[in-house]
Length: 244
Length: 111
Image (cartoon, rainbow over all chains, first blue to last red; front, side, top):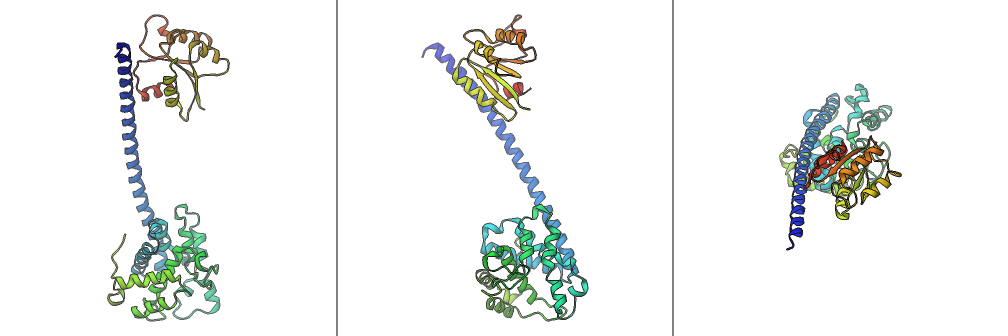
């Protein structure tokens, strides 16, 4: 090789080596920053969840439910979401919506909320405002995203006879369709001041019977299958491994 | 506000490499392939920094630095190549020996 050319190639190699060294340094810095960002995000997500859960507990306690009700419906709804739409269930906002579904009940007078008997027409109208009260309360919290829609629509029915908007079918947010099944199931299987809990298998039959009217038929069937797989009808609703 | 850097190198390949390297959010890159073209471009480009190769076919980078400074005292001139001595060398603000570290080059040009 021509010595001048050889010298030029050698200089180019040296230059390339410096580019490589800088590139390696930038990549290392980038990876370190990404790890820091991921750690910060994990911590932030955990803080969000704790905050949301605390907020939800305030409502549930006012409603006379217990912490176990909140945990149970949350876990069931997450499980069901994983079954019905695994890609969406990974979205933390679904969980926020499940936890905060009844946040609007803080705006309902205790006399109506905890009335030991059936509500009259006026009381029932007041009670039915809780999804929209909830929306008003949490709408400014940007990280909740779609959770707000779950809060708004968890009393909608597949046949359009729910509230507050009378939405039907797939016009109802999937998260709300999922939660509606779980919430109804849990209400039926919990003893309240005005009625005894239904036996678990009877509650499951109710869910099946209302698939396609009150509930999204696919979601209702998935729930029944989930309960059968977990032997919930025989061993009780707490036979559910915590998923988070 | 973005700073403008005028890159001067007679080797089209190296000119492309330098222009790509400096094409950052806070820098606007203009190019010239000779000292003469660089001086001509002062009529249309208002560079904050001139990055010139030490070896240019017409006028060397250090001498170009002196001429640029005579016309635009405020402009920062960085010469890329083996450093020179004498009065010409003192005209430039910085000299980066080759081969150069890209990060160091960006840091020098960005000020």
